[in-house]
Structures are given as C-alpha cells and as structure tokens.
Length: 135
Image (cartoon, rainbow, N blue to C red; front, side, top):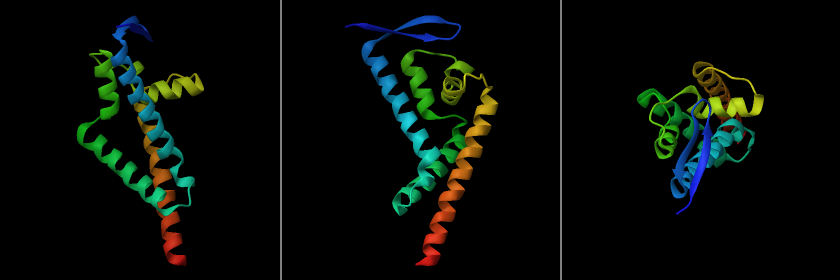
C-alpha cells in the first residue's frame, strides 16, 4: 500500500498510510463544508436550512462548552498521527492562515469563529421570526 506525505509547519514531513490520509482529508473536507454552512447558511430563505443552521451552530457551541474542543479536529489529528495539539494543527488557525496569510493565535481564531457564528445564527433566528410574523 502506498504512502502519502504531508507537511506540518515546524515538524517536517510526516508519513501516513494512504487510507488514513484519505480519511483525514475526508474529515477535513467535512469540516470545510460545515464551516461554509455555518458561515453562510443565514443567506438562505428556506426555513429548514435556517432551522438547521440554528441547531447545528447551537450544537457546536454546546460541544465546545462540554468538551473544550472540536471532535472533528481531534479525530483528524489522531488519524494523522499528531499526538500533541499545536496552533498549526487547529482547523480555524489553518483556514485563517490559508485565506489571509496572517498567523493568528488559537484564542483569536476561536473568538472570530464564535462572533461570526453567533451573528450568523442571530440573523437566521431573526429571518425565521420575521417570516413567521408575516404569515
């Protein structure tokens, strides 16, 4: 079975068996899709999308409160064989760095995500309230 390599900043190349790498990349892709839905789900005018947006983000907030981290990030790290979490292995730190080329601390990335998510969730709630009041 072939091997796949990926780069972790400051650690050099780490070898991971292809299926594990594939699973980790699928988890990362799932994480991206959830991020896009949380970030932009409020734009929809479809009720079930707005309700899903509210429940998903509320569930994520609850999960963060209970466990202190995101299970998708934890699973991805475990599958990739990363034993100790660093700022370079946190999902949002990597995403922000990729799109802005700015390095942010984990605390700032979490603050940004929570503010964005809460505002997006509030917009979904307001849109549903307006829709139910008009009908």
